[in-house]
Length: 143
Figure 1 (cartoon, rainbow, N blue to C red):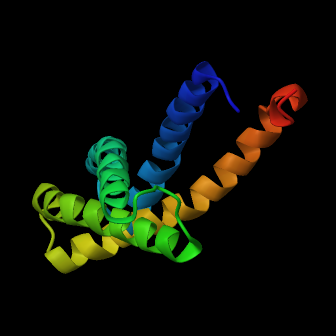
Figure 2 (tube, rainbow, N blue to C red):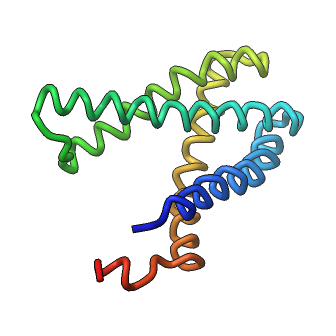
């Protein structure tokens, strides 16, 4: 397992690199000022981080209450991910529409674009992170 310091380095580097990539790409894609997209990206990253903590805590408590455990099947993991994204969308959609002065439909398309970017980015970032900062063999094998 990774250390707390490594997890903090992972989280901070993930967010900073993500913001550096998504801000100019979003500004170009949606023909909007970079500072506006940057503000949306920072608010989105902050909301996603807070929502992640709250949502996972609530989900685990609900599972304990309803099922008596927190083990997730593949189907439950898919539901878990979809509900997380739906909650994040519900939180970000009005903000994006208001802040950027766009319609709810335009905000939905933008939010969906950000979500798709972060899906691909998370895969690539985590793979690269594991290559650059591998878990020591003695920790992986539990020895």
